[in-house]
View 1: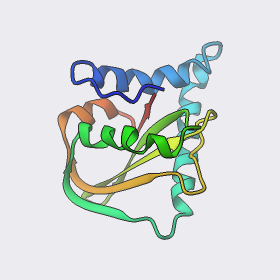
View 2: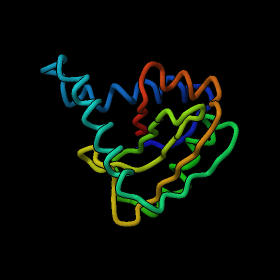
View 3: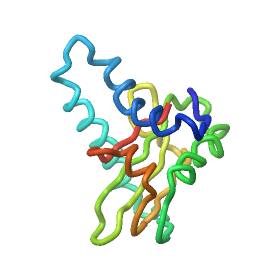
Length: 140
């Protein structure tokens, strides 16, 4: 799993990662790609729904680099993780950005796996571009 942040290619790599990881699983059935993205997003939302004590950091702005730093900073705590995820949810005038690790089936890791949540007014252009029209980024 590559969590290295390279300023030259990180936007392209993360944007492609959203599709590469999922597309590898549905090459024979491209019409299932949207269903797969929806399923992964639902799994992540369900995982956060059961966290009653979720600590949300409130700040005005979140950058792509700040979001990506979470993954290498916490990687040693979850060596079995196969990917990371960045999930965006509208929360009134704010956006809720959640960072977490996924297993080999793209399900959120449980049992004390590192997670982070930020309530922000806005994100930088690089993070906005990485999301594109989607609310999920898969980080490999």
